[in-house]
Image (tube, rainbow, N blue to C red; front, side, top):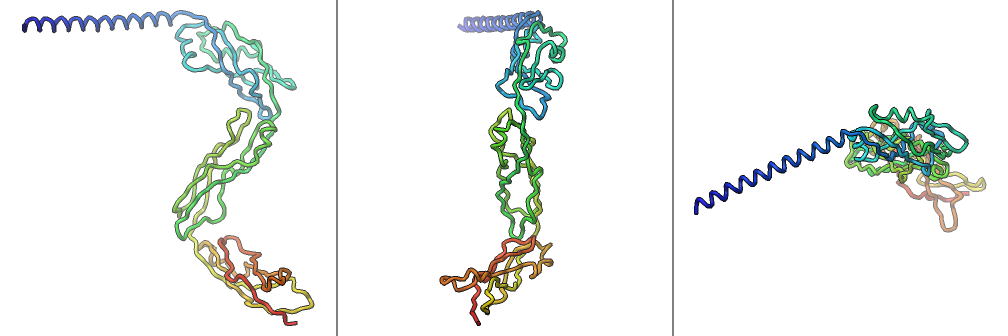
Length: 322
């Protein structure tokens, strides 16, 4: 019984090794066959997409123009193999390889052949090009500068705030494209920047929300740099005189209070430079009606560098003395 099992096991191992050897020789044979095939010359026609390079900035080549060339190539199979892994493309230089008339750019193989041929390996022979000529319709481009709108959601740490405005670099984007498309774009927004507990200067690159991709429109930027100076802030309060205007010459009035407090928020840097004379509060006597027997103070002047200005007195009482 033991002898029979041992014999069966040995036969199984031998058979297994024979199968492995067979598979190895089969794989090697296949590889040799493939290499032999690829080392031979073949003639195949391949479709190439067209890359339009050096198109004058003032023109746009319309996307309804023919965008492909069928090129028949003769070369080793190895050289052709790469064109089947992804869609190949070929460059057409609009500064040298085309002629222009009032409505189209004209490319033909008689003037563009040498530039086209230079884009292939020297071992590749170009047998045929179809079509032999291509017309590219174009339109005159409109160039327009469009402002950028910054979208920002920011929370400063207590006692800190932005001094001045955000600086955008660039603050406007150049758009180039057909008038009908460009005229519809009046502003470019940024992605929303979110900051929390900020107490230091801001320096952030942000992407632009460009309109849906259109090959006929070009944008000078797809990102911009946002800068902001953050400083420590404090609250200030000043007493500001009240001026009443448009009082008729036929009457005289007395009003009170004549001075009201104004609170504001400013940076520590500017705090000592803020003076009462920098603010101006007025009441307009013309606003008095039967239903409104008091004057409403209005802040009509404030210095730069202050925020959240609040008048602490909302009404000014008055009496007519004459």
